[in-house]
Length: 360
Image: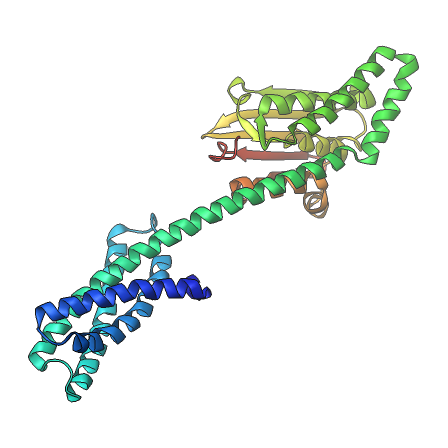
């Protein structure tokens, strides 16, 4: 249904505008072929009412020919054909209506009606063309409103995702392992234990402080990820080897808050924690083709396709990140995951420049 027909107030306003169009047609008809105003009104009034609703069909024509897409000449041909066709049908109806009125002694003879039909045809083309322009403006306004709505939805989703991410960071296993490692270090290595407590507090402060921001520089994400890795190093010791290869040009790129740490946590929990012996975690960031390419890889046990789907679909950190990236950048920018048993796992993100209006 046309959105105009969803509200009585809109319908009345629209018909009021067409009342003015009908008055203009009456005036033109009286000027070109002298006759009583009542005769011209009887002819043009009903026809204007009919054409008012016929012009609403321009909405579907405009939707089928969106601005900025397709070949211009083809679009112009379709739009011109729609205007000519609509005006032609209106003129045929006008011919029948004029003949019926003339039979009742209202309106001019055939010669005068032919002149009136010519005026109506030209007016019909112009009016339908104006309707096309108006509907393109309406569609542009709707697109703007939809973009604003998506922006609000992404912001709300980001807040929800950050709360879920906070729960993910406070996962009982994570807290237990961190506190257990600290407890073991209190007597044997008090300095390291104190450093771990500070790192744990730093992670919490970051989550609470950055909860007000949608995007942060990659450098900030690396900093909190390093804090998380320090806690894991205290637990794994020499078993955890971390390599970080970050291009200097990528440090200032803005990325969604808490998008790197969940990848690292998943790599350790699902890839390296079960591995016997030393495990390698590789973090890489670079700018390629205008996008920030961020990858986290491990040489752990890897995962089968069902296990990978389980982590991807139900794991809090990765599923939240997937949904956020889809809302912010579109479905083509979801995490790319490759894994195979015995070959480790790699998660790669391709993040374009921050959409305008979202970085604040």
